[in-house]
Amino acid sequence: MNILDGKKISLDIKSEIKNCVLKNTKKGLRPPHLAAILVGNDGASLTYINSKIKSCDEVGYKSSLYHYNIKISEQELLEKIDELNSNEKIDGYIVQLPLPKHINQNKVINRISPLKDVDGFHPQNFGSMSQGFDSFIPATPHGIIELIERYEIKTSGKSCLVIGRSNIVGRPISILMSQKSKFGNATVTLAHSNTKNLIEISKSADIIISALGIPEFLKSNMVKKGVVVIDVGITRVKDLTKKKGYKIVGDVDFEGVSKKASYITPVPGGVGPMTIAMLLKNTLRARNF
Ligand code: NAD
Image (cartoon, rainbow, N blue to C red; front, side, top):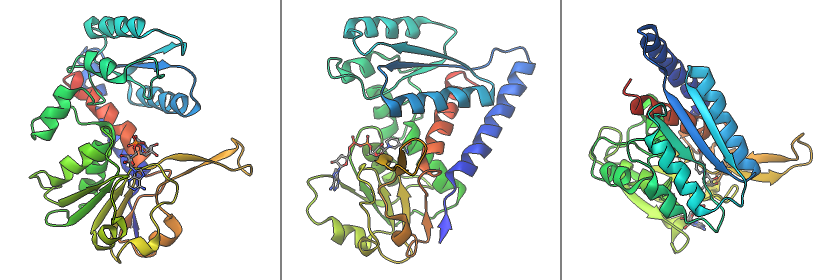
């Protein structure tokens, strides 16, 4: 069994980005600037935003955080988005999801300028990605493809099961894995909560990408020997032995599945750090570096 070490690869990518920023700033160009909008005080969202901001510092980007009270109106938020769209000093920005229920998430995503949409969630970018055109690719699927590429995992002609069909992970990674490209060309099955015969499908899959958010859902009896497993799930599970009172658990029963897998991502330290690295990469692209 080999570990797909997202932490290590993300550090390599960050170092490449840092060098690129240095090269350009030495020429007198301003560094990339990533902004983030956060609404409310959800613990997980705060953690994600803080690590994104910290990563900006590490690679020499400028960053700005716009943190709003959970009661902010949809109109106020849309006005802030319009402001960021026209702010020439901000190259890209993200709106941390989920948003509170009184705000229409789709309306917000649609308002983001596709040119600054470094999360790749705008339908224009999603459509371009789906058709194989150059575009911002959502950070998590982008990170998975990068991990596969850097470990030179063969995907062409393989059967790939994606579990979960969200617009931010499952659906886009199912599209990328089936695309005609070196690290695609797989035959993809996209499973979701209404899939009836999941275990039959998972037992024959060469590659399994799990993004459903149920701790340790994928057990060793559901996979075949030699399978490549990419665990996207991040769930906080109560654990009073930890200082924070919880631990982070993935969708995969690592202990059991790793005994059968040829490659597997750990949680934490797999897809999570890759997501941040690819957000930084998308921002580099937004800055035209
Ligand atoms: P989501 O929560 O929006 O949707 C979950 C999906 O799982 C749905 O499409 C649903 O149909 C499917 N599902 C639920 N139960 C199922 C079952 N029994 N069998 C098959 N499919 C089932 O998904 P999301 O936003 O993509 O998040 C999924 C997980 O990935 C969460 O744990 C989230 O925290 C994590 N996540 C991690 C990263 C990262 O950087 N590592 C990024 C985004 C999301």
